[in-house]
Amino acid sequence: MRKLSLIAIAAGVLAAGCTMEPRYHRPDAPVPASFPTGGVYQTQPAAGAERSANGAAAVDIGWREFFADARLQEIIAIALKNNRDLRVSVLNVEASQAQYRITRAQLFPTVDAVGSKSVSRTPKDLSLFGQTISQTYNVGLQTSWEIDFWGRIRSLKDQALAKYLSTAQARKAAEISLVSQVADQYLTMLSFDDLLRITQQTLKTAQDSYNLTKLQFDNGTGSELALRQAQTVVEQAQANMQAQARSRAQAENALVLLLGEPLPADLAPGLPLDGQGILTDIPEGLPSDLLTRRPDIMEAEQNLLAANANIGAARAAFFPKISLTASAGTESATLGGLFKPGSAAWSFAPTITLPIFEGGSNLANLDLANIQKKIEIAQYEKAIQSAFREVADGLAARGTYDQQIAALERDVFAEQRALELSDLRYHNGVDSYLAVLTAQTNLYSAQQSLINARVNRLTSLVDLYVALGGGWIEHTGDTPRPADAPADYGSGASATPAAAVPASSAKAG
Picture 1 (cartoon, rainbow, N blue to C red):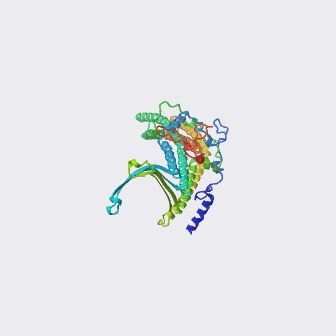
Picture 2: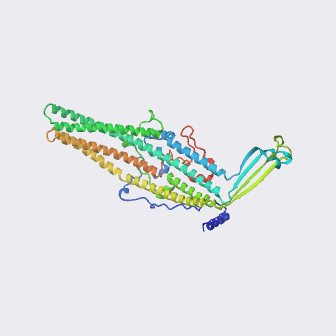
Picture 3: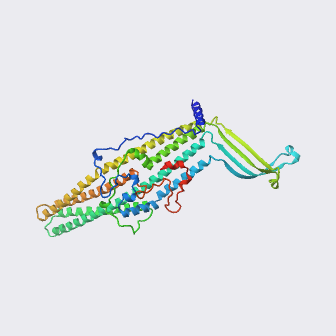
């Protein structure tokens, strides 16, 4: 039954003059037609602020315009030049392009210059004139060509091209991700700077209170309980400062790894955490926009196209393989006679190979190709679902963080005022010192919560920008580079010009 279906396929191929690849249909996106609305998604920032996207899509906004911090802009530029993971991604594109050219070359005849000498011995009773040793010299050209009658090589070429385009999209995704990682790590460093600042302030206040309480205890006017309570605040602040200093150093180490070199000493001055001025009103568009804006989705689709092409190659393996081999040159029994008149020699050997029994390998290869396509369909659908989830998470964050931070700022103000009143009541003998310590601890906790919310808000905005496809162009208005565009990320890492790939690769984006 399967043989009959393959014969029918072959008849269709001959009529259409194409390969045996199945007709490609892009799978339907397994996500809603629009992003969530209402609830946590309801309050989104509107255009018109001092720094506004003015309705531009994320893919059209350069990362230098998205980030206002000149120091961060310099750091991102350094990372794009030196990051080793990105350099490997560029080299992977080159390797995939070379593999495509290798596969495409199989469509054309091969021509080789050949020179040979052969020596043979014949038993005396079988030889003519008693000459048992004979030798032959041969010089000429040899050519061979497999006629791609059933499209097997063309399918393999299409598969290699799709893999190349997939690798190019993977490189694009890696570069966009690097922009996001550098920004997130830089903002994390700023948050630790702010945490260290408030911890140092808390430690100074706690140390002053401890010194006063100890003086009272030494003079017999204070209790040991109040002294130990004051000491706990000092010790906790000192422990927190060491932990935060360690985390800050580790955050800088992570940033240096992304940069591929130490942080330069002459970087431009940076902005504080609460003054970053990141664009907040980038429109989300529709989920269908992600299919052409997210390189990871386009990478998954190219992998699906490669699997689809592989089915054509697996189908073609059931049919005869036709090869032509020919040679032409001169042949002589002596080296000096190679180019004398009458030494011309040629041969022509067409070959047809029909698979009869392969132990089931052809059937298994076809089954494997079909299964691999199903896997790639699932991977493609998962990439769309993941992109939808990332955008929806970003919209939920953007719809709630502003209100959360406003509430935390009011809480910090209230805790600061509570500390001032508690300290006043203590010095007037109205309240115990425990109330002052409690107010100090509450203020410190509220300040830490505010800083954490601020950095989480900023990193969520960065992640949303990338989730919507932003981060590929440097300046707003730039013409987007092809995913396989040449790049110079250091010595030995310049990509091969995209001109080496046929125009069909333009769909790489």
